[in-house]
Amino acid sequence: MRLSYSSINTYETCPAKFQFQYEDRVPGRPSPALSFGDSLHQALHWFHNRPVPVAPALEELHEALDAVWVSEGYADESEEQMYRDHGRQVLTQYHVENAPGYRIPAAMEFRFSIEVEAVQLNGVIDRMDRIPGGGYEIVDYKTNRRLPPQAQIDRDLQLSMYFLAAKEVWGIEPERLTLYYLLPGQRMTTTRTAADADQLRRRIAVVAERIAAGRFEPQQNPLCNWCDYQRLCPLFRHKYEKEQGDPAPRMTQLVDEWISLKRGGRRVYRRLDELAGDINAFCEEHGYRRLFGTDGGAIDRRPQHVSAPDEEKLRAILQPLGLWEQVLSVDPAKINQLIESRKLPPDVEDAVLASREEVRTQHALYLKEPARTRR
Ligand code: SF4
View (spheres, rainbow, N blue to C red):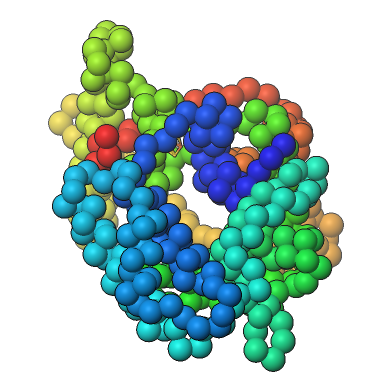
């Protein structure tokens, strides 16, 4: 099996998208973001690819951007020009920050292929620099607008992978791993340890096992609105099919009825809550336990004690009596969360599923109110 940072990241974000993109090889659409990122990467490769430690002039860098510019995916010429102007601004800022201390990198656009847990892991390291005074720094360019929190950089899959690759290919453990966010012109740096590399190996093994077992469930995520595969996705396909001519109009009637009843139910529960407030206040004031309606039906008001056990205190009381085990129970909701996290190896997931007394899958229906999605 061959995997890369992008494919693993795609699988972990949504296994169904991985299937469409990497298994079925359904081509995605070109986009301004992809072309813009590609153009900047190539221009920066040109900037750093010099035989002498002297930075090229800014005008030359702008010319290089024009030479490598990728025109695909833009809606029209004016959009493309807007991106091109922005690209020039970004490179101007990059030149100001990087030309003065210009040094020849130790490696650039380095393609690696290493074997990890029987998986061939491929990738390209944008740049590796020698740190003055000793050690190495891996740098990867990003064209995201916003900086992520540092905690995200400290867990970043791509940087972990590059750390592992540097260890395997060059036998070095880079001291610094940096994502260079070109748009805000900021670097975010982190480190990794040998223990992180071991954790990454296990993570790759789980993804590979799940792919080999054909686990490709769709997973709704914040990037769904930009996904090229909505028309194929089980979560969105029906909407597109309906636009082409409803494949099952009778079923659409039933769906409409279900949604209407569900919304009505919500209204009812909201009103019940409102009424409960007034009824409780009235009973409290006048000392009633029961209020009668006009046909003999009544509202019975019963006290309910809401409490949360303090686990430590309870354990201290019950454990010496040998009763602690009797109040412990496995939480089915937490087991479901564990399964739905899709982070278990497939055989472990199957074993957890099979360990339940009743082995069956049932589907609950939830109402999802319309949201804006990209076509
Ligand atoms: S639309 Fe969302 S859930 Fe469907 S394949 Fe794309 S990313 Fe996955």
